[in-house]
Length: 474
Image (tube, rainbow, N blue to C red; front, top):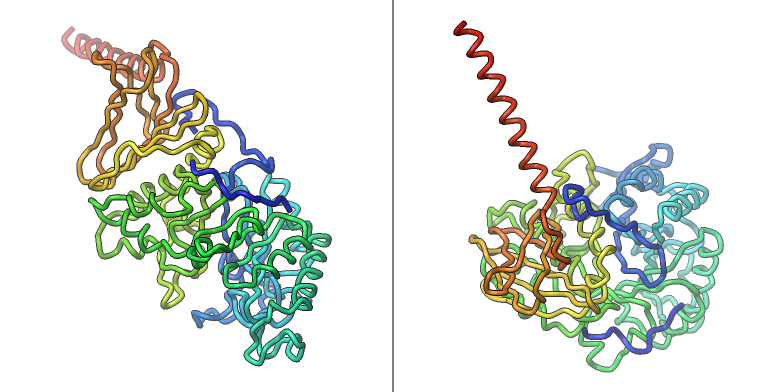
């Protein structure tokens, strides 16, 4: 495991333009785009493993999602730019979330066989996607084969202060890496577990370690969780994030000032498996989900933290955590592919422009629902505009040298220097765009060729109609 002793420095283009986007890199130091898969609720790829545990009439029952269902959608995951999938707990469990563990020795039979899991991991690797597995470390079922051990308490809670518990779990995780070739593990609510035990576990098990932080105050109180994990997931701020993108005039100051906002060693999300879907939060406003998801996702992919997406976001799905509808099975044939294509563009741009991954972030405007910022790395500058308001917005840039141009990546646009030496970039109401600084290319051929083509068709049509009319008059 690669240790980080100091956490984080604070710090396609569309085919229409003719520019190419670099392919995703599988290098260790590349940016991360995590995609959490709730295996039971992803897709039922085969009914052969649908045992009598399947109960689709109950919101809390097993629905039949399996490894074959994930395997059928690997091309989709690759297309939208996923670099790591996080599989929900794979161990035998009483519940579909994998939290009430029956056995760490057996896999959940409704998900498929060990051989099918191996095939899934192999094919994900072939697609350039790493595989992390969520490891449940809080609780075991009252029917678990572990009940009676001295590190299992009466209520089933795992006493992770006990070194025997750490040794048992580390043995299992090492066995899985050898057997299935997993790339690492994810631990939820990591700041609620003993620091010394977590450090012992991550030292004994090689691989990439991702830890969920449910209480950011733990970091402020001296628990340096970045010494233990390669990266952490920020929990607890989703309601505040929701409010910034459901309305028209909220500023982003409180989000931008959060302690871990500028860290590259942190992942963040819009919604997740323990929250309502963002789509549900939009219902009272009457705002269109696709429009608002594009705004929220642009923010997610362009600020310093790495993006983590819960399955179905790209559909986009609706649901509430209260009735567990946020976990309903994905219907890949439903919804609008606009959000999926937007995610694809954002992940490609994030890979193409290093400043979006690790560049310094400077706020240019944050007021009344309009956020503008730049990401800077060496000579590369990228500008991001996110407009949640009901009117068009713009900013004038004065620090760009003369003779440059700014190309819009999400929405096709070209901005050149004004007579006053400034560059005016703008975005329409409820829209976002990303601008990159380029050398002045002279004639903007994409627009020019389209214009010439349209005029050519018009002239051809006019001549044809003239000849037909002339023929009638003869």
